[in-house]
Length: 116
Image (cartoon, rainbow, N blue to C red; front, side, top):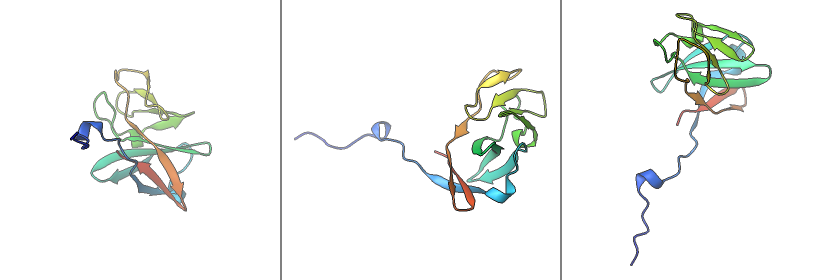
């Protein structure tokens, strides 16, 4: 008889959206700081869209939620690394690696993010 069990490596990752911020607290053009499930997050509103990334820069751990947001790009306040908030891509160093991004969705008056 064939074993029908699935190893952990083969199991699909499920979406786990959890509340991260109230929409009224997130202002366009101003990163918002959130601490959720032990993770530092930076939340952004660009136009009518919301984005969530890790809250720390990949260069030296600077607080991205205290940086400047301009046309969908956040600038780290410590050394000036810039990242696209929708993809996490580095657009200007000194950072070499991208930042982690999370899927978001609106649920009533709350922004939720998939932190998996």
